[in-house]
Length: 82
Image (cartoon, rainbow, N blue to C red; front, side):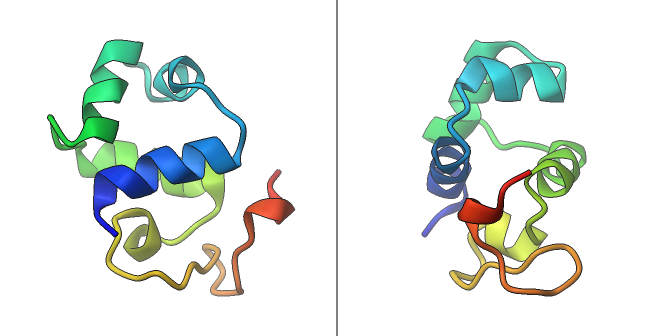
């Protein structure tokens, strides 16, 4: 899975809108939409915010692995969301 599909999927798993995530990142909804569509690439600073917010590893969030882990290394489940 590529990085922009993962951004959309994890947002949907947490029942969030693009506008809500955009506010978290201090950007506009249209800018966040471009990240989810793969039109623009998101900076590492924003990935760090999302990793902390979702409590998921960067390698999963960026699409490098399909086996999600939390930030402390335990198995991740979107059902255990904050």
